[in-house]
Image 1 (cartoon, helix red, strand yellow):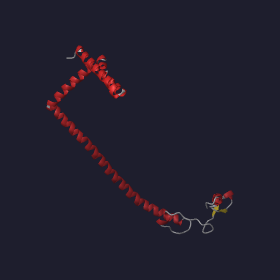
Image 2: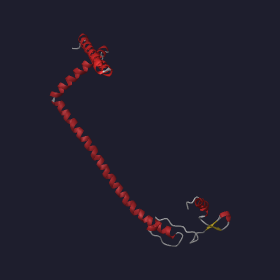
Image 3: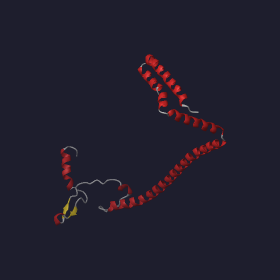
Length: 190
């Protein structure tokens, strides 16, 4: 079936026609068109000289045989039907898994947030009560726990017992911030 003597004139003729067409394309449409057509023109001879004609002939013959057996074979059509079933089943199963995982995630986050809310309310209210009663003897509420307390100088228990240098001397807790306050006042910020 395959014969070198048959393919040489075919490839040489195709290349010669391509070179002539490239010459005319070069004159009419410019250098880019001529060079592009010349590149296509030399391919048939390159294929023949490298021995790829035999490879292309073998591949082409096997492809034609497969297609002709494919069209008339009931086994092949049943195989195609199974490919179709697989192509439908696999994405559907993946989508179902994603949906189940999303539902499980929603249920878990719902359980966790419900448990956290109930627990944080109890802890928050006891913490607020403790914070409110720590220094002043007042009872605090949950509303007061989130608000910062204003510190006024000269009012309330602003001084505490300190043990600086081993002496029982009272110190102002804001004494450490006097330098910062002075700098802010000099710059007109405070």
